[in-house]
Length: 287
Figure 1: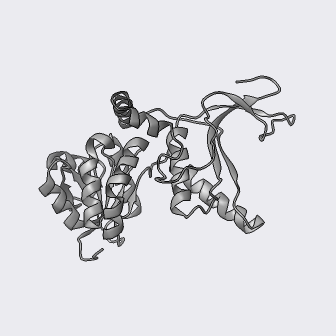
Figure 2: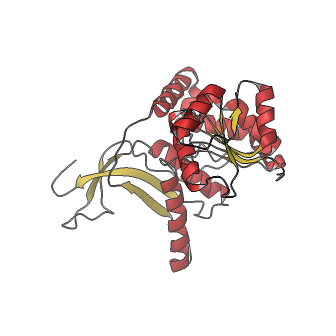
Figure 3: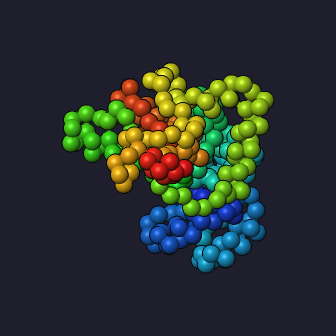
């Protein structure tokens, strides 16, 4: 991609809750003169200016009016940036045209998506174009998914260095959770359920742990649908530990398997992975 474009990153959806958090982060870590050229993007110039002023960004912070439903607006955006970071969801409602434009133009794309059926549709529709243009389309780069995806990657790297081969079985376990669903997350879940209700193929993708690895089906994976005692974890007395379904497992497990797929099965073609929430010890029967 050309370096002559004025921006390295445009935050698409900068006036929303999550987009504003991204702008605040960029403002703190990459202020003017840092070398990273970034801009705020959104549908309303007035709202962009208001957010710019509210977060204390300089008055000359670039503002770009972008509208994913307007082809001319998208083409103008493609001409101005090397990467689009979008927080505008549900992506199955507002992301189709943006992914297509990035894939065709060779512009990198990053989102916070937790909609695996839509992600698969985008892979099928635009992977060839992205490969031809050099665009890197990266889904699920939010806090919900990154710790698990990178955690498995780093674990496998260390495991390989110590033992000479990847770990065939990895368990993701969450000890504590804090926080609630954002409005965007709730809207994405609602849109996904509506899509599944109207299309059985969407439901099949949601149930398939290898929905993001086109042409590859690995070994049977744990469902993670009900509480169980995990004997691989030791409680205070050496007993197993109770684990329960983890709310983000349905998307995170798919992302981990896709990373393995894109890494030419660096974790092994027989890799097994699941995620659960730790709730108590098996000996006391706590749950």
